Image 1: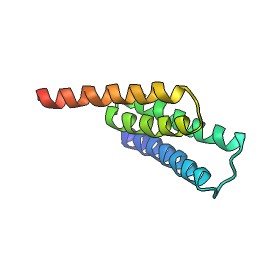
Image 2 (image 1 turned 90 degrees about the vertical axis):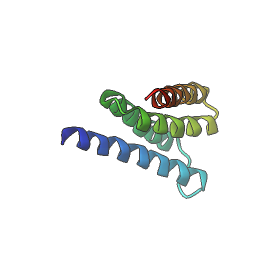
Image 3 (image 1 turned 180 degrees about the horizontal axis):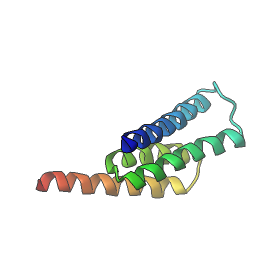
Length: 99
């Protein structure tokens, strides 16, 4: 039950960050440093929680969303996050092919 609760919290954080990204991009939310910190904080917390749980598929999805956000902001770290997500997805695919 605790694992399910942690997963729910992590995915809610990631969803909130993603929604805020979309709102900023659409001009529905003001693009401020505080808003960007809020988005990054939610994504970072979600990533950490998913890492601790070992949910690689959900982690890769969140990393891809976070990377897209950072890339859109011109932040170099976005590329590294996207590469990490691709590595996780490749590993999951190869594991699936072996099984």
